[in-house]
Each structure stands twice: as C-alpha cells, then as structure tokens.
Amino acid sequence: MRWDGQLRDPGAASAAAEAGASAPEAVSASAKAMDPALPGLERSTLAALPGHLRSVRAPEFQGAVFHEVLAKSALNRVPAQSSMPFAWTINPYRGCSHACVYCFARGTHRYLDFDTGTDFDQQIVVKVNVAEVLARELAKPKWTRETVALGTNTDPYQRAEGRYRLMPGIIDALARSRTPISILTKGTLLRRDLPQLAEAAERAPVDLAMSIAIGDPELQQSVEPGTPTTRARLETVARAREAGLPIDVFVMPVLPHLSDGAQQLDALLREVREAGARSVVYGPLHLRAGVKPWFFAWLRREHPELVARYRGLYPEGASRAPQEYRRALAARIRPLIRKHGLEWAPGRPAIREAPEPAIPQLQPQPTLF
Image (cartoon, rainbow, N blue to C red; front, top):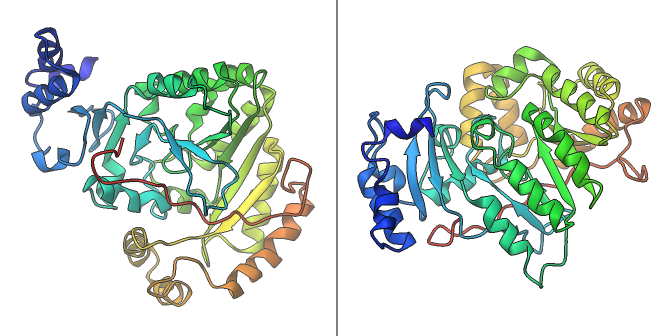
C-alpha cells in the first residue's frame, strides 16, 4: 500500500512473523515499530485497539487517521430486547468520516477510549480482515442464514471504503452462504457494488436503503459535512433501481424546526419518489448522551435561536423527542408519504416510524474487534 512510507518501519510485523513470532507477537512488533513519520498520533490513541497493525494517514483524507486492525469476529449479535428486524450486524469500520453531528453511534467510540466528537469523525478503525473472518463464521454448521445488516452503527460506504474495498468481500461471503443482506448507507460508493449485489440477490434477499434526511443543500452540508449531497444520493437510488434492486429511503432523522416543515418534507418526498425509491421510513431526531453535547455545540454555533427550544424537546436524560412532537410529526408526514405512494414496503402495510436505533453489544477490552 502506498501509505507504507509513512511508517518508520512498515515491515516490522512481516519481519517478526518470518522470524517465527506468533500473530499477536507480530502485531505487537508492528505496533512498537510503527511510530508514524507524520506528527500528531500519540501512543495513547492506540491503547484501546487490540489486534492493532498500524495507523496511517493519507493526503486525500485530511485530518483522518486509519487504524488498521485484525478482527477476531465479524458478526455481531443484536441485543435480544432490540426492536430491529434483524439479529446480526457487521461493522467493517468504527468511527465515520461522514461526521454527521446527530449520529447516534458516536457514543460507541468511547469503547475505544476515543471521544465522541472529533475522534469519531477522524479516528477510523478499519477491520482489514473482516471478509475472511466472516467467511469462516458463515461456514460453521450452526449458522442459520439469518439476515445480516450493515450500516446500523457506522456507514460501510464511508469514504475509506473507496480505499480499503472491504464491502465486495463481505458481499461475496454473504452471497456464497445464501445469507440475506440488508444495507443502509449515505454513501454513493454503493453504486460500485450494485452489479455484485444484483448477483447476490439471485441467491438470497438483498434489501437496500439510502438515508436521505434533508433536502436543503446548505443545511445538509452543515449537519452532515462529510457526506455526499442529497442530489448525489438520489441519483444513487435511481442507479439501484436501474440495476433491478428495489431500494427504500430512510428520511431520518427529521430535525425539529429545521427540516420538519410540511413544504420541506413534501419537496423531499417528491424527489425521493422521482428517483424511484420503493418506500420511505421516517424518524425524528434521537439524542443519546454521547451525541447530545456534540449536537448542541453545533446548534449553538449554527442556530443559537433554537437552543432553548431543543432543550425543551430534549431535556437532560431524554434521548427521544416527546410524544406530543412525534404525534405532530406523524400527522404532518404520513399523509405526504401516502400522497407520493411511498408507504413502507414490502406488502405496503401501515406507514411506520423507524424504531429507536439499537445500541451495539460491545465490550471495551479485549474482545472489541
């Protein structure tokens, strides 16, 4: 990899392995010898990364550090109490350069001894062997081919995927085992894998969803600064339909007093329908403890006039908008979803608000990966 030159001794791990060191010893040798040539990466940032191979920077990812690790497992069990319609997830990355200020997954970065703000956006963990580990797990006789979801914690098609190309191997492993796949993303890099996903759909169900919460370009780039534009995501929806893959849209989170007006929602849903989306799921903003300070810092900076109103909606200890607000939003958006023919699929049952995101079952040490 062309980033190897940024390490003082990029061959330390392989040299240790050739000398007869075990895999953990080789990893340790790499970690000890990989003091980065570029400044700013302190040893403390690596403390919570078991299986760590190396950390790299690249000019095209300004400010980001990619921590390459060896995953011990690929499949994550969803908590039994969760309302999610799947039992398993895969997270090829931890942290997300999309940098959405509202992202509910920010709190999970604390398991790595990183903060939930800038570290979440810039300290990205890359599970470089995730596809190989997944293939072994799916080959076990006890695997029952339950649906596996990607994009439930951090986005599998964030910008780093363009470099590491983890998703093709993951899709291949799932397709070979005839395991149903569910992918939720904001990333237009999904287009790269549409032919492969179309082939996978011949073996097992493939459910795709694009997250498109905000129609206003200025607001969208302010609150989701690392993401593709809304227009680019709508075009990706259209490309998926052209590939023969039905794709749904998650209009979430709807931001109170910012993106929840009837005209705003009507215009966005019209564009979603024109792009060819099958259906829409919506949901208001969630603000868990690890997210709330980061979101309110953005709000004070960009929309100080709304701080008091948001504190009323999300007082200390509350992560969900009050029932009164949720009912008002439902009364506003559900008729618009029906108007545009975007009732939730398959089977077109009653329009639903998305359930609150599940908190992944994670342990800080040593089984994190």
